[in-house]
Length: 312
Image (cartoon, rainbow, N blue to C red):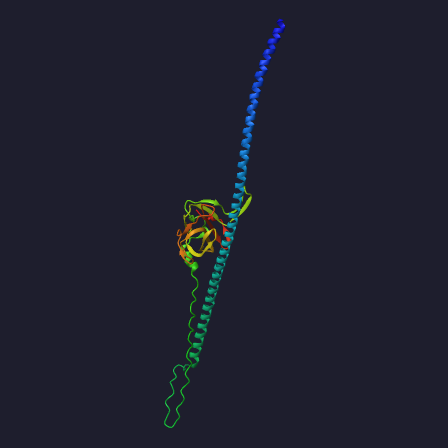
């Protein structure tokens, strides 16, 4: 009976211990179920957020693609303006070269003509003038026929008048007086104050969108209405308007250098105007996507340059 009593007590103790373990496991299971429900709820929320982010990303990618398309269109338009202006510069330089050659040939011809006329006059004087010491013939006597006077020597030919000087375009000399030497590089002021370069020159890869873009210049982010100034003196050779990207001003400098200022709202210079360094040419315009960005380019001839190599 003692053994049975002891066994009963042990069984009761084991039963109580098993009940406690069961309650603990049941409580743990309920906690796990609650956590699973919470995880499931959070997962659905995250999936919804991811769906929204994916939609936003697609929208953002579409907007970026559209902006890049417009930028390419703007760059092509600017390139066409640059090529047209460089062709005008080439023709102007060719006219100046031909005019210099024409003047040189004309000077040589006039010098040769003067020498020929001088030699002809000298020959006439030497052959037609009376010999040295000879007296003129005496007057005729009564009844004698008067002698016919000697035929006068032909008058010396005069030097032909010079042709009127053709006035050529003085653009290059005017620009030289107001512009710096671009070939030195690294000394030009920035076209805007306190700007941030948001797009650099050349090719760049957008890793998120996997898009390669090419820029002929730099984009500088500034507040709307920021004054835009010329980086050097020169002559305004083009003022054009591009849809979506506002006004474009092109300034000519010595040695076939051109600077381009795009995305301008207000323009304060006119085509053909000679401007000084740091002179205001306009202000930055608001972009449809928000904010304001000034596009700046440097060209030498028909080759685009990295503007940041010229800006201090």
